[in-house]
Image (cartoon, rainbow, N blue to C red; front, side, top):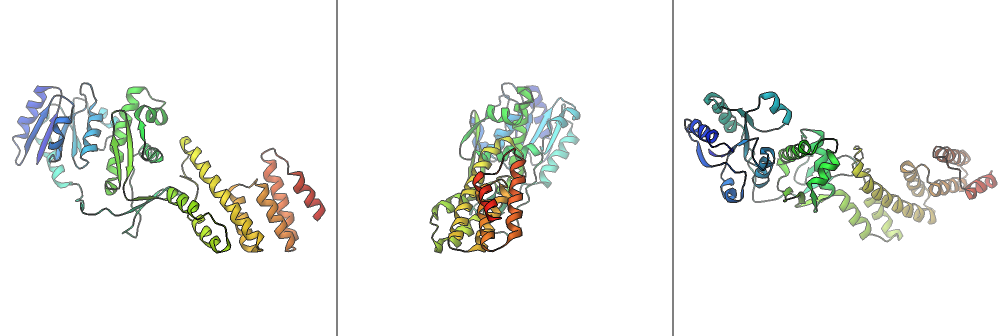
Length: 370
């Protein structure tokens, strides 16, 4: 088992190396009092476990651990610290283990045994299976070659939110300062950045099954989420929708199929403030195309289809006067008097809740119809 050590105290390194040498099959590939990786990146490919002091000069051990895992996510991290276990618990780290200084031999043996019995899953390096990533409606991960969605276990709610935030900005570098200001604005700067590094660590652990498809790149000032062989449903939906722009009768069925790919609002079960802009934009696109489809069916007297789409519009936007008026006129043409009355009164109530009054043109039509 190959080992690396980072600690700013040379005596602490010497003592831990001394203890490690008492164990069988342990090879110390490097030790360092400086938290820099440039000269050690090649060795990181061969490392199984890194012992890392949490309190390092210039950069925290938390940030250094995150950078190590960004380069090689299969490395096991063991934190070494002078803090007691209650302080460690505050970091909420999902590290393999932690050790208190001075490190006892029995405790070290237990840690090494845990590495031996908790190996990372072997990865197939020869192929990348396409991943379907759904953000319309409920979040889900579905590999093309599997019948069941992946069960992603998020260690904290913030881990999930940060992943979704980086996915929201997929392909772009998001500044760490912006992330901290968005997700941890209530904390002081030092604590906020510690939470950021820990949460990135948690995300990497949660996404091990998707490590080929989803990569989080650590830049000097930020993070960039990159997708490989990933079909993101909101992007696919928009591409298909705009590629089939014709509303000729022959294409309406295809338009309907594509519109049904919109399984729900963008991340609909999450109330993140930063989601609202894109959620509104996507819903506006859906409403616009639903209106076009409904109107096309209405013009060709396909009343059942037209009713279906106008009703779907009103479920998403109950105050939509255009869709409600179209429904009233269809019901009137079919002599569904009760439905005309119901639709008119329902529209009145929905508008009243927004302190709005019904359009005079609709009101005049309704009175004339009665």
